[in-house]
Length: 456
Image 1: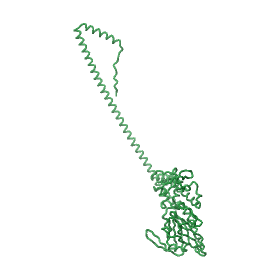
Image 2: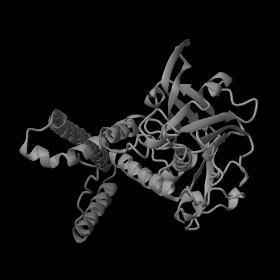
Image 3: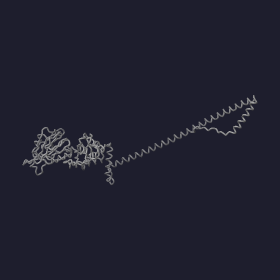
């Protein structure tokens, strides 16, 4: 599909049909149909007859990919236009002939034949599938001073007549001629305010800019290292994209007569490789092909990576950029409402943060007090348990002592009873006790074993 550089080249071919101001009376534009069955949107036979040898070319202009020939007729002609499904016929001398190339349309001349990558190269004139020819003729001599033709193999293009240039108003700003002033600001806003993939946004002729087609969109994305599916551009990214686009278009238009003059590091020079698997850029990096914006897109995936980013984040980046740009002005003047609002939001965030810290501190104090109370209760329970254990041990010790004493008394009584019955046994018993007494005095003193029960 012809893009802005190609269409600008075609505009310059048509400009050769323009009559000098002092020669308009003697010059005529001869328009002839060459082939039957033209594209659907095409001049009628009646319109061709009305224009033929009855007008001169005043100017040839372009917006985006749309061309316009401004014609001045010597005799008024009837022009029928359709708007909102209503047809209107106007008789006028001043008319506009719009030409759109669509997929394969071309404007050529014997000395200037534009090349399209989609079509086979040819130097034959007129080109195959030519439907219309334009000849600038000298009325007096009948000599042909300049000529051009319109061809379209696939017949998607159109050539229509109108009474005004309203068709230009439907298009976004021209990507080459209107990248400045208010139009530039509008373009930047369109690029940053819409969450649409950047390539689809560039291909839409009514959205941000007009004139960008498939290979230019890929070239811009490549040079800006943006993935064609990237959404929500920041202000800095949008500005870089606009600057890069302007540079590419200016270079392409200047070199279009010879595409060999395109810079060697451009993606354009490598994207047409027949064996796509072997396509590499000027630095040897692999070129891959994906679908984006409904078209085949050539990218270098190693440097063109899609960044996940929300629209809110992009807006924040844009706001930060705007604040930096206006920093000098706001230091001496009253801050703009947007900046004031931003500071107010920041103050609210700080206040909320401070309140949250205080609440967390209060919660920590409560938790500390609860921990202390829990520790006190544990200590008290431990002391109570220890006291109960001591009392139990004391009771057990007393009971054992009583049992031992009772056993001792019983033994003494039994011994005394036996001694009364048998004096010899009494004497022997006494002697045994004396020996045991002496033996105990010689033994080292043994202390009672301490309790190893855990305390507390």
